[in-house]
Length: 65
Image (cartoon, rainbow, N blue to C red; front, side, top):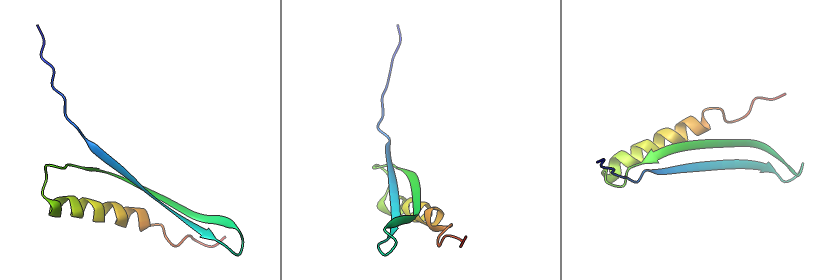
């Protein structure tokens, strides 16, 4: 006989796209993914989101060609 348990993991992905309307083209895109535990306190979740945003924006602005 075996026992199984399940749990929920909330994973969110934030995507930022910067579009140049004059050139009519996308010039930068960034993605960040982070797991948020609803049972954690809100401050810890906010710190995780801040870390994800810092990582996402690390390569912005894009380097010129």
